Amino acid sequence: MRQRPVIVIFDSGFGGLSVLGAVRAARPDCDFIYCADDAAFPYGRLSEEAMTARVLTVFDRLVAEFAPDLAVIACNTASTIALSALRASFELPFVGTVPAVKPAAEASQSRVIAVLATAATVRREYTRALIERFASHCHVELVGSVHLAELAEAKLRGESVADGAILAEIAPCFVEVEGRRTDQLVLGCTHYPLLADHIARLAPWPVALVDPAPAIARRVDALLARGGSAGPPAVPQLDGIAVFTGRVAEGDAEKLVLKAYGVGGFTLMHLPL
Ligand code: DGL
Image (cartoon, rainbow, N blue to C red; front, side, top):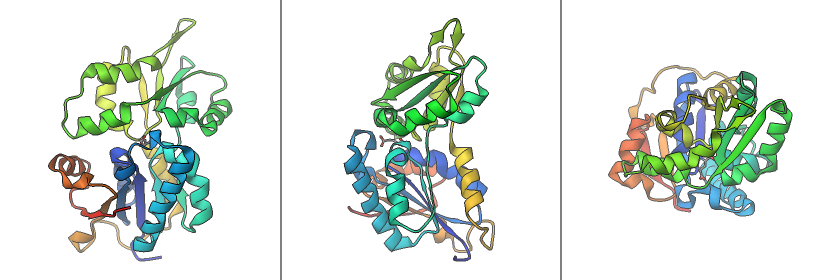
């Protein structure tokens, strides 16, 4: 391993930024490559076969270019289907992101929890198995959102997104079952924590928003041996690389978003696929 291990944080778009911060804070001794396959965004619309093939293609390039020591699939939609194919194809360790059903079920007082994810993640057998295994004592409202990841991207870019549009996506999570109300809302797509303030403000009653980023950071920390030197790299331009397969990083609004989430000092790269 290099003196400073290299970690790839991968998502279809901006969603992985909600994970990057937590992992970076946990491992200041590592260098980071943020990769967004924005040319194929949103993954929620791709078939399972198309998405798996796409993720494998992107990683072929990432591994060839950067030889990372570990990769975080900071995307539930990709993790719930492509993780085993990635592990079978590449030798590096992969940390996936799956809906945080277990901690939500453990923390719930009302035993009513909601899982909000892309329609694709909601359809997955993997997600249903998680619920059966860890939340059988709870009522679980499984809500597939078609638009929220795209609304999150638009909102971050500063485009006007009506509160009503966000509310329409989250409203089905708030249910009452035999006088008990949803008290935990699992953010089962990494784009959703980027809208946490909006979701909290628009929620019909207060709920805990369950974000998987801290658990992912702990998992990365456990898997990866410590590098040599903590703190920022000596050479500033090595303070990370942000790779985009589409053109997202070229717009001014997108650059502001990246800066807001700590990707400002990163070198931007376009990796056409
Ligand atoms: N950020 C991705 C996730 O965690 C989904 C967004 C998409 O549909 O591409 O599921």
